[in-house]
Length: 298
Image (cartoon, rainbow, N blue to C red; front, side, top):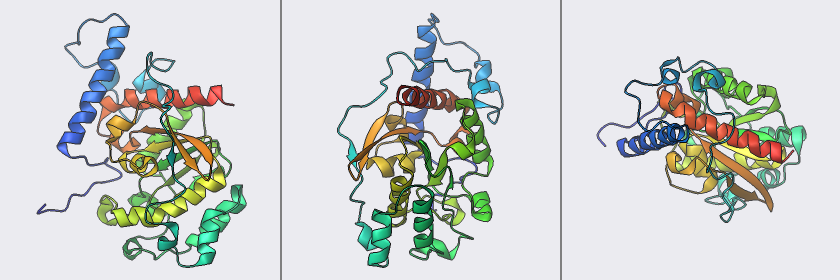
């Protein structure tokens, strides 16, 4: 392209027209199905009031989604789990020493494990992202959380604060968590990429490969029961897939790391909701599916 495609974490993920159209069609089908289940044989002429309310309101209040997971929606995809034990490109290619490799593959569990990973990451200069970022944004939350949220990369606010999801999308994520019955300190929140890409552009494949060993090490240390991926890049990275987020979301997947199986639930990034109100309903349905799974697996 003549002009580099960029996107803003604060404003929402950029999509090519075909992918965005597929996402919109998927959201429309979900809404039409919801109407049909409730005996509405036609599409209302005017937008539903719930889609006209401010997006930044509490998800539970603004979406007004059903109290249970949608009927006929699969709760778990019983396909063969994706094995994450061998990262793309190989961990050794992305680390600077055998000591780093040992730390990332066997960091230990909980807070001490996360501390070892953070020390290993250091003031990272393993790729070109270090030239423009302010600081590394490692992650934050309960070191033994059952529920792990993984986004794409820090934005401007996160780069300045050194904490994940503190901008407009982060405030919406906090409301989403409260709608699920969680505080931020009860879950763990991080990103695939630990440094802000210049002008919030999409991460490059080599940047994803370089940061992935640290994300996998965080999963080893936290040992979550379920991972919620926020947005296309996080879902594609952990599912080893190039499918759109519209195709990946709507069901639970399985990934395996070092022989331990973890459930994974892809959904749209909160930043996407800030400019696409119609996506609130499918996101809330995804979160309800996660809540139902956690209730069944205490």
